[in-house]
Image 1 (cartoon, rainbow, N blue to C red):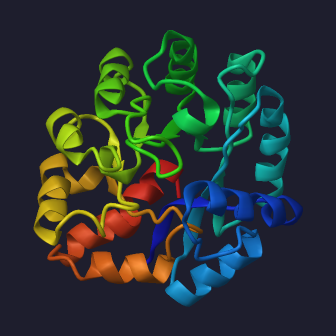
Image 2 (cartoon, helix red, strand yellow):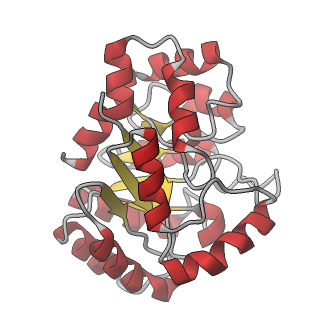
Length: 264
């Protein structure tokens, strides 16, 4: 059964050497990998992952163009990059048009590291342009271990407002709609027109709860993801394969849904 990991991260080698220790210290979290693309590919080979979506995060407005170039450099039949735009990048519609014309399937956004709330007005033109251009938006959803537990910028209620306002947007809600906010996600997002991505949910939700949420949402819109290098690909594959999904459901979650989204 082929596998697509819909949520990973990697950096250029020189940046990885600086960024990973800083991120580990900030989050008090030990990564599985060193953040280099070569290490991700080795992990994919060992775990049996065919394709990884490599998500980037523009933490400053002037990083978007460089990220777009790097994403173009690294993409292959095994690496599907999602470039990232900062909310304050000049001419966001023009940048998004270039990303779409270059053939990228989506972008990645992170409210905490990019200092925005999911539903704030300055994000509306970005969502509208993505919907018009057919670009998916993969969003960090819920709490984040590196930020205070009362940070609500990525809460499910905000996601729901965006989904209601932009129904044509292909929205990927990471961490099953809201890391450590699954009650709200279950109430506000499950069954809605978005994708749910699985990373960092398999450990904290019981097997029964996870399967119930996935089926209630619709397994046609659930994506397997690990958030590598912060979790292990082989380990998360073992966890999801141990759940009581049917082979057809598992095939959709591990491969077919993401393949459809990526145009593979």
